[in-house]
Amino acid sequence: MKKQQPSGGECPAAAGGGPGQGGGSVKRRPLSLLPFLSLRDYVFCMGTLLLFCTGSFFYQLNGGPPHFLLALRHCLGNSTYLDDHGPPPLKVLPFPSQVVYNRVGKCGSRTVVLLLRILSEKHGFNLVTSDIHNKTRLTKNEQMELIKNISTAEQPYLFTRHVHFLNFSRFGGDQPVYINIIRDPVSRFLSNYFFRRFGDWRGEQNHMIRTPNMRQEERYLDINVCILENYPECSNPRLFYIIPYFCGQHPRCREPGEWALERAKLNVNENFLLVGILEELEDVLLLLERFLPHYFKDVLSIYKNPEHRKLGNLTVTVKKTVPSPEAIQILYQRMRYEYEFYYYVKEQFHLLKRKFGLKSHNRKPSPRPEFFIPSPLETEEPINDEEEDDEKWLEDIYKR
Image (cartoon, rainbow, N blue to C red; front, side):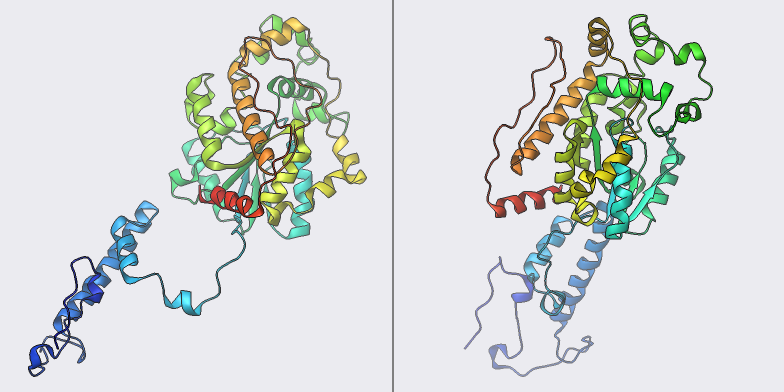
């Protein structure tokens, strides 16, 4: 009885063409290297091996499997020796082992770094910090060198430094997971303005160490005079500060405008696991603990500890004063792109909070001129999602 020939849609491996067809005697082909394989089977095996090697080569070049390799895997089936005999698949999410916190100045970063030092000892991850605080823009060679140093750090690591967004994949590295925190742009500017002049509660001479060359008349310059008389420190491009941390190292990222704004938004969506709001720091810490428990487990209990709060209070800027309403209005006009980015991030952050059932409690809504963009979505009530949907959404984050 003759075997039925396979249809054209079947995989090549299913097309037998075996011996004994037509009742004739079996003749071994002289070119066959193996006694139990026909020449056709041998050619197919070698062709499959060639396809696999070629596919692996393109996989490494393009960062993913090409279509023909996917088709080959589908044809040969998903079961492999590793699947059948190796360790069982992980039941938990594979949390990233490379995290970068390119902290924005005067956005609570010293408080978070203090927490990270405690957490690194508690959970055993490698906290890589930098003593460079005033070099956020890097040349191409400096970017390559920094990325090389970060990428070779012992994993799992969390690297933190005041530096504009770095594109690791541009230089052939694995792109890490980014996190960050921002705050109301005017509040951030005022905190930085007075910190540079008078420091914080950690020591009377702290500000003298950071700005030793500042003249006395500049140190005691009234904030209203600085804004209303358009001093360089209180006008663009120095007011364009937050967006470059997310836009990146491109020269246009330092120019206030739509291009830098849109690129910053794109990077937030594609490269940042979480960008929080300092005004809601406890909720930021809650989400970080949920997303990255290997790094942030128990962070909120540590943050609320009275001893830690005592240390955290030492980083509060001293001698801050509030500008006049006229001066604040001018700052809003000069920082319109900063505010558009801030409210965009705030809206995304509140959507995350809704997903995990957190309420938004805004103690003091910051003043905002009427001409500005509409208010972001506020979260009033928690959403009761099922746990499975919650975990599925988390998986989608890590697949981005």
